[in-house]
Image (cartoon, rainbow, N blue to C red; front, top):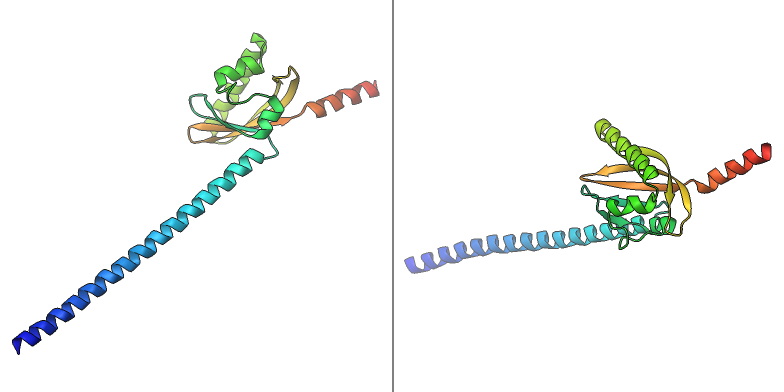
Length: 175
């Protein structure tokens, strides 16, 4: 009789333990499936962001805290003609974009000042208009602005060249 009671108690205990184990396994499986779903959602989100960045209608580039250009979109390469392989960092950018040492020094000074002001104020920046030499030799008037991203900077470039040319034509017409 004790054997039957002991066996029944063991079966009940084993059933309880099995129930707890199966519940834990089911919860762990559900958590794993949720992590997989979240991972896929994150991958999809990152892919959408990368596509948005690459195909944005505004030329953009990202430089890290060391001055290395870590990303540039198609608009950037179309506007300036520089690829990341040829101009991988700001040290290479400045002489290409400003072949004249005096213009380069002035542009760097204006850029540094805009960056310092923006950091001090804790906001994005509008560095102003710059005359940038492109790979094909054309000099474009470009408005440069940006935001800080952790240790880096996302800069956007708006080509004002057609507007400035139209203004010049209008002034000549008025005269």
